Length: 193
Image (cartoon, rainbow, N blue to C red; front, side, top):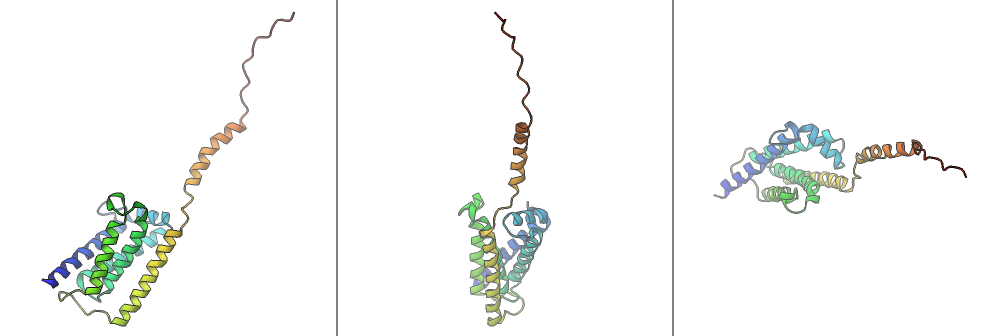
């Protein structure tokens, strides 16, 4: 029973990572595609956006497949935890709940991934697990990379995309100020006495 439950949890988590990746790369499942995801990454301070979005999708695909199969455990769940930690940081302004674009879903994925990494894949898996020393090195490197991306995102200055719009709005006002006012209509002169 325990091993079947672990397999179900792995398939669920890994499957959703494959869906996330197809949203970013292909625009499937109502996703933005690589252009849209790249623009969103840029907006959040992760430039170059398209390359960052492609890297995130590659991490989700690799992590998802390794999680489903159990190959090189716990590399898959740790990759998922790293990617979803960055996603949670992205969603931080939405609050706690997913209904408002908050952190609920990515935090749930991180929790499930870390639980699977700690417990193991169970007996229904393909291939060997990682050596503990390699797992430690991978977890530290992945954690450092996720931490750097989160820091970059949280400290990023929003792009100056709004400035051209503000400049365009100010231009007509400046043009109006530079244009001389039309002459006032002539009033009839008072008769001289």
